[in-house]
Length: 226
Image 1 (cartoon, helix red, strand yellow):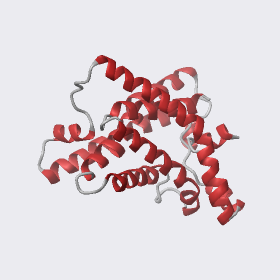
Image 2 (cartoon, one colour):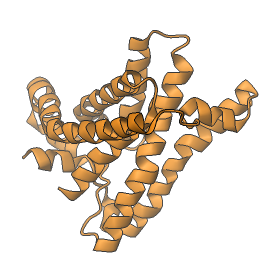
Image 3 (cartoon, rainbow, N blue to C red):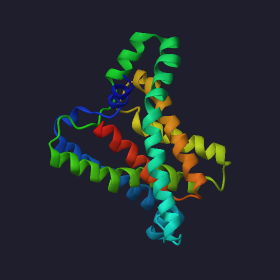
Image 4 (cartoon, rainbow, N blue to C red):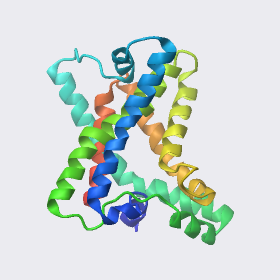
């Protein structure tokens, strides 16, 4: 039941052709390119400086500290995987269903964006796993945590920045221009919660993308495999 609930969030109809899904994953690079270029024009600073703001800066930490960040990211990603179904259950059945009813939930789920490949072969699955590590986790964390938080925290308190970044993260995964309002209401709490958790990881590790990217990628890969 729990695993099925998680998988419902990570499939799209295009998943019937994993090669199309693989191509679409590369669009996530726009999460770095577009905000970086826009900010570069507005602030009149080089694009490279914008990348540094996102977290792509020289790593000066010791090997042992980097290893601890990697291990922490793996552990956090695994923990997210363990609690994901319960978070989803809470928002769908404890909150939304009790307020709006079972039919609302059913219709909300039917409009969800689904991004899990359907019956991929071994090569396709390996490629998708690699892209989750090298593109999805990095690009999403660089934008939702690195870019948004770093750009806003000088003007807003940390709690407001956390809420803002988590909300944008949630809206990205249930975009109003692609899914019906029932789907947004049904699933936004789930994604918002993970946005908050990843923001807390980002703050805890002193604005380092490493544990966030690894946690994000680990969670996605576990959902894909299991």
